[in-house]
Length: 237
Image (cartoon, rainbow, N blue to C red):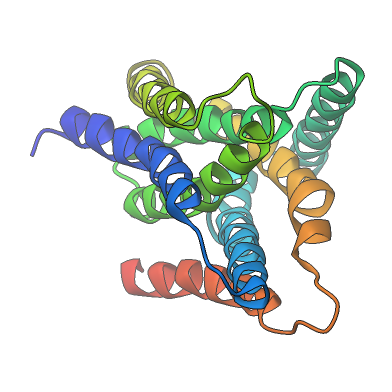
């Protein structure tokens, strides 16, 4: 299959995972409150584990390969600071879309890096695509629940919005494929910038929401999310 077509399909499918997560949240109606809380928090933890595996197993190892220690550290910290500033801004304007903004802030640079990875024939490109989809699923789940708390956002319109946002993936992927395939330093910068932002999001937004008093299973979602990435890395190596 043509590599560019693979970029378009994989980034689109990874983006549609946001809509799938929103759809699951829309239909998720469990009468048992205890079970519902376990599932909801477990889904969030799974997303955190997938995000952490993307950072630890793919984005950071690839990002530091073409940069000096100081440069790599700078871009990683800048990513975290940028996500923090976005978080502060969203709180100031009192928007119910902080999870949505964080999801897009992850998805777009990752899709750019994914397009470049496919262009350079990198062996971990398909693994990165899978991890992006795995993280977008619970992020879409959480973002839908956040938006659905306000009367201004109708559930079906939110799902449609997520489907439309999925098209940003192929656009970003094509940009990475054509413009960054010959610039490994730029790819590394994007990967590390995204990594810093993702790590900030994990500990600011996801991890604090996972814990439940007298519930012990939700954190296992993080273990499962990470092991998906570890297994994929070992299979693709």
